[in-house]
Amino acid sequence: MSVGSGEINPSQFPGGGAPARSAAAPVNLLNQVTFNRRELNRILDLYGRMVAAGEWRDYAIDFLKDRAVFSVFRRSSEVPLYRIEKNPKLDQKQGAYSVISATGLILRRGHELDRVLRVIDRSLALVGD
Image (cartoon, rainbow, N blue to C red):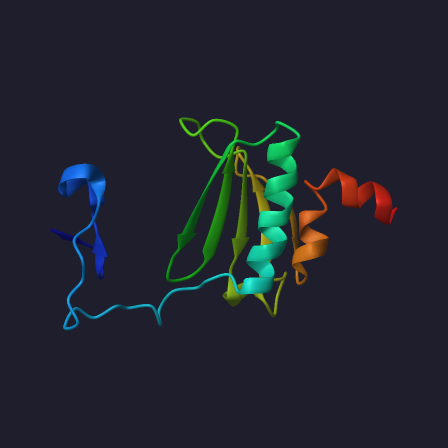
């Protein structure tokens, strides 16, 4: 019933929920990249404003071995409009943060999350210019 390295497939359990983990079951969180509280607050602030404007309706967060991804959707049945990715391996090169469009085009990449999010955050781009 396990998928991959310690991931549980929720479709194999009634109601879509996963069973409770026992104390003996190892949780492999050390190999995952995550958003910290400040990053997540900034992304969710943008998400809340876009929902209030009627542009976005749903989101998904994925914590993978090599990157963390925050995907935003207009409708949950569609592909994501944007993916906000954090990839620490690129931190010394182009920057750890990137915004990727639905077509896979990298709209902006950089070292600072606020600057990268300006590509989709129109209100801050207008004030900052």
